[in-house]
Image (tube, rainbow, N blue to C red; front, side, top):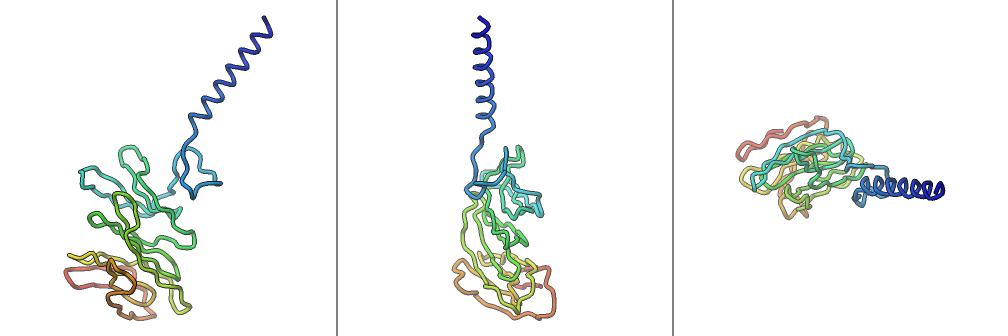
Length: 193
């Protein structure tokens, strides 16, 4: 009888251990494999937060974070709807949202301007300016054009207008190479930098 009690205890301890481990198991994003990211999908500390109302009337929060993540979060329960992890050498400088599109500006020397689908997090289109020793650090100034899918961005030492076919800018305007451009405002068809 004493042997069967210790066997039952061992079975109980094993069953409890297995059930507690299986309850804590969560899925991982591919970029998290091999890294410690325990229970929740850690997106990092928000640097910028933009509330967004979806077409179905529900709300979400778009954020760029200290972990270089662009994410859509459910404000009611904090769940991650989707996320995009950027390369650590390509910090996200700014985020803008209009309608069903999110716009990001990332990079330090090389510049990346990307448009994302707000509902799914899918990449819509983007433009990359390769690094150059003459470029200074990017400000992250970006804006959507009014009544258009085009965007404006400070890229290196230029202000560029980009469209959904971004193989090359719609137009490019050289800026003063010694100035620092922190903000971009579009009013009707006029842009202020």
